[in-house]
Length: 224
Picture (cartoon, rainbow, N blue to C red):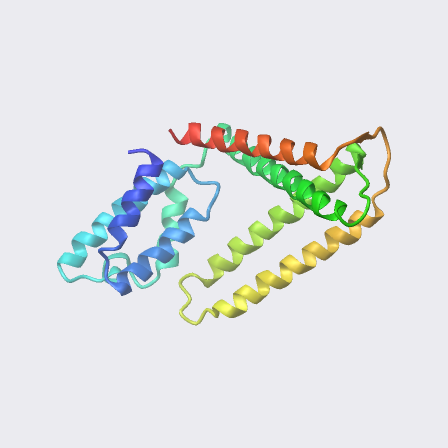
């Protein structure tokens, strides 16, 4: 079975678990899936085997703690150590997909913002490619940091009965606000240099939309 089929079947079968077993298994599932270096195909196959094993044990009156032990994090870490890593030829397109998807949304947001603001005052549409590339690289770096930070917060909250969801959301919110503040401040100090050309709101919107469609179609093709 392909990765997508395994995920769909896993989602359906998890509904057959008792609330306690579902919470136990779901924590391990998220913990393993949040490890981007692992082969997703092999990860989903192992997760399905674990789920089938748990469902069989549940029919015999056994709990997830009885089957997998009282330390689910340790058990999940042992599984991660034995899973193969994702091949570089799959990791690189995945990363590029994130980058181009981010750029497409930035283009779309720029076009919409310029269109709205232009209704009230004149808007400067001159673009300096070199300065823009530096700014986009900074934004991308902070976005990737925020993604990593969110993953860390989620991982730390797993297997932890005393985890405070509101506190975790506050941490993420503060981190995102600080990152945005740094990006805005840094953006004000980046000088305009090199060649320039006009880039209207319509051109920005169309470029972003086309790029988003390309990324979407490539992802859809890879899934099939």
